[in-house]
Image (cartoon, rainbow over all chains, first blue to last red; front, side, top):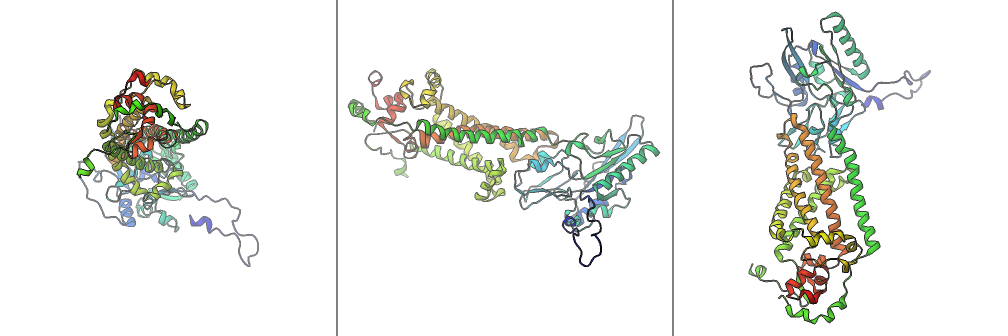
Length: 302
Length: 222
C-alpha cells in the first residue's frame, strides 16, 4: 500500500525526468494457487500460524487425510483434500488451499454494519479490523465462500489478512514464502493472471487436463486469490469451491433497496406526523361540556 | 410495600385510566423497545451508527440488544395478559375505522362511541404484540448465527430481512403512537404516567368506557 504514496515524484540534482514517472502502475496484488502442483504438505498452514502467532490445533482423524476439518478463527489457511473417482474409474487426489479469496466485491464488507470493521485496501486486500468488530457475524452471511470465523470468547470475527502487515512492508504473504513446490505465487493481479492463464494453457496443451482453467469468479468482481484448477467446470470437487459465487441476492436486497425504502418510510412517517400536527393540531377538550353534567358525578368511581 | 399495593388516590374530578401495574408494564415495554429501537437503528444504517457509540459502543450494543429484546418480549407477554381481553376488534371498531379520517381531522363527534381502547389503539397493540413475536423468532437466528450451518446460510439472511421488515412495521406504529401520545391527544401522556384522566377527556375519547366506570346512562350520555 505504501508503495503508492512513496512513488517518487521529483528528484534533486537529477538530469532529465524522474524515471518511470508516467508509467502506469498496477497496485492490485494477487495470490495464485496452482492446485495442480500442490502436494498437500501443509507448510502454508504452519507458516500462517507462525506468522499470525496462533498455536497449532489438535488434529482429528476421520479416515481421510483431512486432519483439520475446517477453517477456524485462529486457522486462516486450510488444505482441503478430496479423493475423486472419475467416471472412467481413475482416482485423483484433489488438494486445495482454502482461505479468504479477497473478492473485488466483498460480500462480508457489504453486509457488515460496524463502521470500520472491514476495509478493502486499494491493493485488493480485504481486512478485518477486530477493534471495530461488534461480533454480529453479518459478514458470514455475506460471504459466498464460508470464510469468516467467529471467536465466541472475544466475540470477534477473523479471517486471512493476505498478510496485509507483510505486504504493506513489501514482503510476500507467509504462505507463499513457505510453499516448497512453487504452487503458490504472489505478485500484481495482472502478472499473476498471466501466469495462471499460461499454466492453464500448458495443462490443456501438454497434459490430459483438457478443461484446465483459472478460477477468478466474475460474480464477485474477480478475486485477489485465484486458482489454477485441472477442471474449471467442476470447482465444487475441490472441497466445495462454489461454481458461480455471488454476494447472496438477499444480502444485496437487504443492503440496497430495502434500506432505502425503510429510510424513506421512517422519514416520511415522521414528516407526516409533523405535517398532520401543523394542519389539524391537537384534540382539544371542550372544558365547558362538563358544567352541565352534574349528574355524571353521581357515579364517582373512587 | 403496603403503600405501593394500596389503592391509588385519584384527585377529584379525575378517573383512573391505567392502574399502577398497567403503567409499569407499559413503561417496561416501552423503555426496552426504545433501547432496541436505537441500537437496532445503529445496526440498520451507517448514518445512525453513532447511536451505538452513545449507548456504550458497538460491541456493547450488539451484546445487549438481544437481551433487552427478551425483556421487551416479556413486557409484551405481560401486557397481553393484562389487556388482551379488551383488544378484540369489534363491529363498532370496524365502523370507527371506516371513519378514521374524521378522527384524524378532529371531527370526533362523527365517530361511533368507543370503549376503553379505540380501534387505532387496538391495531397498534396487535401490531406490537405480533411484531414482538416475529422479532424474537427471527432474532434468535441472528443472535446465534454460529449454530446455523453454511448450507442454510440463506436462512440467516432471510431472518435478518424479516427482522428488519418487522422492526420497520413496529417503527411505523411507534411513530404514530408517540406522536399521538405526546402531541395529538393531550392528556394521554398523563394517563400513562400518573394513571388518571379528566372526566371530559374520558367522555370525549372513550365514552362507553366512561359510562361503564362512572355508572352513567348510555341514552342520556349520547
